[in-house]
Length: 172
Image (cartoon, rainbow, N blue to C red):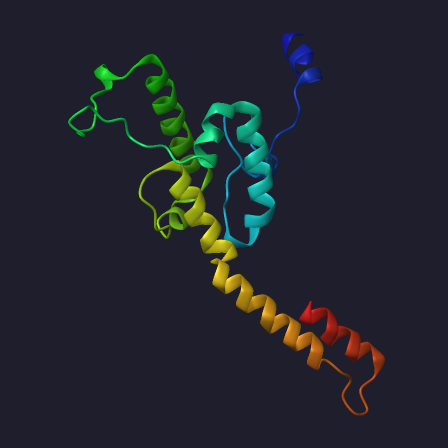
């Protein structure tokens, strides 16, 4: 009798269902875990999901992405010990460490290793952006090249419309 009651509410879950659930969790994130960047191709969709997730769950940590965290120093310009921090400095330090932790959780390790950064949340985020979107000069060069290709685009002699459209779509 007890098993009948349990089975009425249990959902069948085979290995495929478990894998699918994990993949969905990785893609969208859950309350306790941010969305995960699993491959380079997913960056543009992941970036928006990650921003929304962090802003919804850890807004103060997101502020560390907007403004670079600077270690607090004493009058002698040495780094303060944690015990010397004021309450506000502790809050900002914790937010910075939380954001670094979230980025480490959200970015697959083999991608994270490729990032050139100085161990602050903002530098990690900026390095990720440069890695996938390119530097300002690279973006300008790509736009100029694409514009040139569009300007030079024309149909080839004897080319059917379908092939012309395929070449045009490939250019886009």
